[in-house]
Image (cartoon, rainbow, N blue to C red; front, side, top):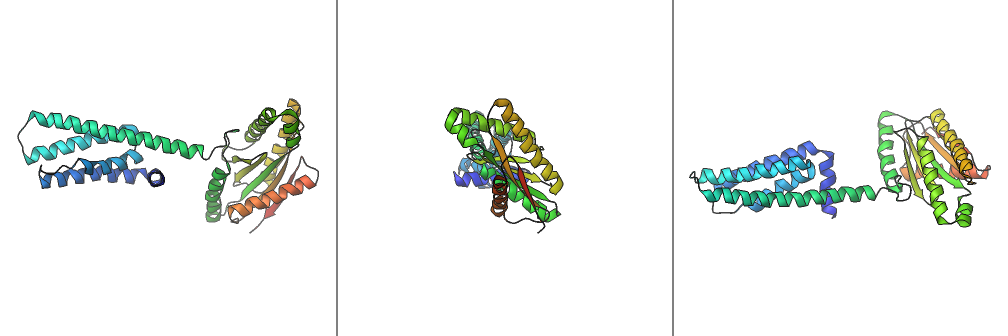
Amino acid sequence: MYPLRFWSERAAENRAVVGLSGWLGIFAVAAVDYFTGTEIGFSIFYLAPLFVIAFAASTVTSLVATVFAAAMWLAADYFVDPVFHWHLLWNTAVRLAFFVLFVTLFLKLRSMLEAEKKLARIDPLTLLPNSRALFEAAAVEFARCARHGHPVAIAYIDCDGFKAVNDRCGHDIGDEVLRAVATTMRAQLRSSDMLARLGGDEFCALLPEAGAEAAEAVAHKLVTNLQATMVDKGWPVTVSVGLAVYLAAPDPVRQVVNAADELMYAAKAAGKNRYHVKVFKQ
């Protein structure tokens, strides 16, 4: 599965180039097929460029490629022996069916790989991105921050009083609380921000291009709106937020998250239901 996942990810990064190489590959195999005559079967060699196209292109384009491959195979056979035989049409139909089956199977596999990739990055309870997705997105954002000199902030969020509610009311209510927390906090963020569940009652928000003032405004909204939601539902749960704001290229992702985590504990130590901010200029 890992080599196929590698192919899928590389194809997704540059679909146009990969797709073009597949079309050229079909033409190249047909040319070799023509120059070697009809004595050698070349069906297996058409599969390689079809494989590439199936991972890089859409379903319709991939199926069109099967027709093109079958037509090129027919043309190679016909120009070697330019006399029409009815069996050419039959052979072409069989080849086309073979190619369509091959491509259909790989399209299904590609769909499964994409679904696997998505599920591996989603928390099943809250449907938020998980820690893996957060760390991947943060690494990309930090690189962009270093390249363009934009600020970036990380908010580490821990639910105060969640364990008591979970122990007293049961895990079903606990799960409902976490979903409400996730929904409420996500509503306070911009579309460009990412809120992820790290596990248990801990969450983390990535705030691209958020300086100290903007990030602090987000933290304030998270604390106040979450408290309002919990009061409305009758759950004695609040959040403590640690906010690490980087005005220049930040440290590696895990160190930044750890810094925000320490700030969150400072907020808890100060009385909970609040946020603690630190600006890093390096």
